[in-house]
Image: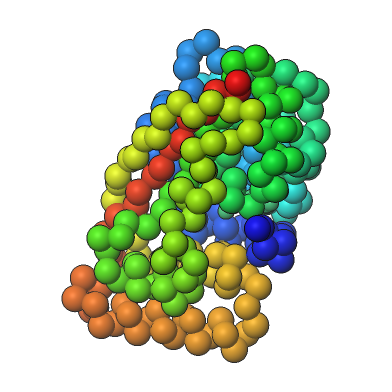
Length: 245
Ligand SMILES: C[S@@+](CC[C@H](N)C(=O)[O-])C[C@H]1O[C@@H](n2cnc3c(N)ncnc32)[C@H](O)[C@@H]1O
């Protein structure tokens, strides 16, 4: 069940989201796209962190996003993209327009049944749905500890595999891919990234201060981060590929 308050928390952010959140490996877009795809639609596009990988890989790129502040940043970064205010449950484009629909870091916010029906409507017959998530690497103790403090549902449950259940109504599951990468990140950027996470955005000032203090305590004590300004942060990117049935 989607938490509506958390899902709408992104209306509170924009510039910070774009500044602090990680991008996606180009390989993730290569896995979803093929040279015959002319039109790509990025759903829940945010500030365009995944959309930008579609530019140059498709002739026509459409972005749909419900948060105006996020969309404003996308428009300024990617003027060649057709950007629409809208949601996964009501995609404001005509039927059978897209060869591929991509959803990066957002499918878990959707009403799955309504969204799948809408995605199937806007896809050409046999079109591709690509679901992408960056997530923490469980082998990284300090990042896992920070997740336990600030985003326990992500630290202890596999939100990705729960959201991308093998079976989506109206779609055939094709395959799952995993990409591992490492990001060099400064301590202030790592802390800034937490300030853009939904649980932080909806927390009151006191809880936010407590969460930051607890994460700083982790960074001050873990042997991989203490007395350092920059860290190696491993990231796992999961890509799920479906075909319209
Ligand atoms: C974590 S952000 C991901 C943004 C972007 N795809 C990225 O990877 O940077 C989640 C996005 O999903 C959007 N979102 C939330 N509920 C949605 C819905 N029902 N339909 C479409 N987008 C939604 C939010 O506004 C937000 O921009």
